[in-house]
Image (cartoon, rainbow, N blue to C red):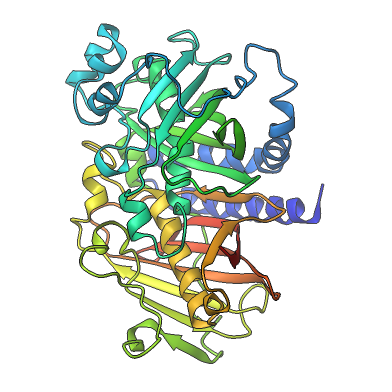
Length: 450
């Protein structure tokens, strides 16, 4: 075991003890708390092993039996064959008839609340090329191949504060086909009707390259790895690879869970509360709210650009503090309850995508880049996602229309400045109304000349 895994294991044991104390202190909603306790216990018990599993999965997927190996990447950018599932069918799955997407066997789901995929501006799939797997058999082998055509004038390219596709969009392109494969296999047909909330739980991504994706077709090869059920919840794990022109540029793994609405309402978060004194003794460098002159950082986009990616109201910087003594970036946003993403994610189950929480963090990091004037070192600054370690995330809560405030704290990890490139990495915690619900590790990128 590595030192990092030992620390993670120790933290998880402490969290399990805390959760047990909570369970013992109240008799209310005992069943729901028991469900959440089992989830935390299972994840804590397997966390170290799961970390090793994720690290080795990219290698293991190529040594598995042919039935569960990811399909060989096509030699062409865009498939010419007839889609297995079309864009119009995907739209039906998003907000219309599930049976029109998957067939008459799914008609019962049209008459009750059932998990959906993102719709409208958040749907990041144009077609499903192929699906393998036996319906109502929730185990491998099963796989999916999907494609997404990135428009030159896509809203996320026009609104992005940094060059290229936002990290959140790459995340959506990678994860959405996993949800479609899960639905196609008939997970909702096999589970009780009240288990109808589908949530991403955790995962990791490794970047092999950072190509220009504007105007190109991204292919996703994803495979179903395993699943298990316990105390009213159902967990599934997937692996995926994104490629363009037959070249894989991103690979990763992720787990998802099916829960009841009652269980989701009892979200307990990640069991950590920010220490308000952590950065209070450090000198405040800059506050976004004070930046209204000259070359000051501007996080708010103009009226044309602010529809989707206006995710931060203010950012504050602190020097020589944080977990790594490299500095802290703090950001926050007040929510109105009618944000655009609630309509697009999901139908009858409005929740902020975790990927947009990550994007808020990325905006804070980009504000730091501009505050340090790193971007002016280059005539055409380009941001590449990079790093020797995989980017890792964990979700244990949700942001819904009744919430009021989201904020985050970024701990700068590395800031390396060279003549031709600048490398930055960080970890971050994300909170909603005072509860820590997301954790991000190894957010890393390089700034260079385009």
